[in-house]
Image 1 (tube, rainbow, N blue to C red):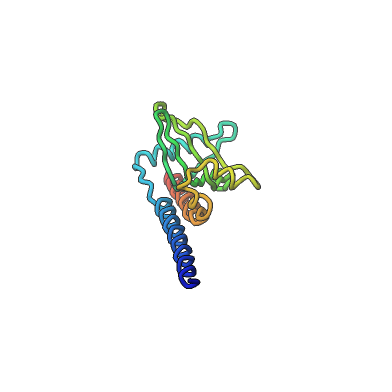
Image 2: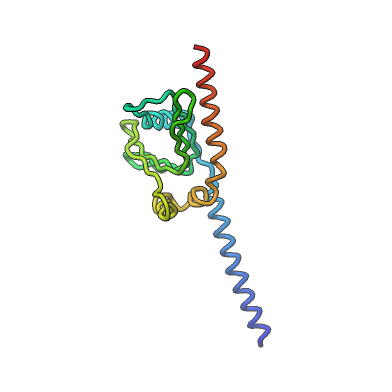
Length: 171
């Protein structure tokens, strides 16, 4: 009789483990699905972000922007873009300011402009603010795997600066 109970317990434990593994597999599959963005939307988003970061009181020579989009949601009036963004502001080829973190950008569909930009809270509220703002399917990329994008985003911004520098030297 005890042998049967042990087998039932083992089957239950194995069943629970299989269910957990299945859900984790589905979670990471959904999370790692590729967001397909048209080149025109990509260019438009980049232009809007650079325009938003222009400071008329302290103009800069050049702004480089690179991003990794995790998710795009669309409503009737707006497009919501979730991702990691790197924005670097330069003056005379010196880095003045940079931002390299998660953002949510709200775009007005009709006016083709940024309505709002959300950034995570600092300190102990950082993780909880991201969990509240980002969709569940992006949590893995937003929280556990986000650092893997840092190097490529920064490298892309540096390449943009080099390209800008070579073009300005030609003129």
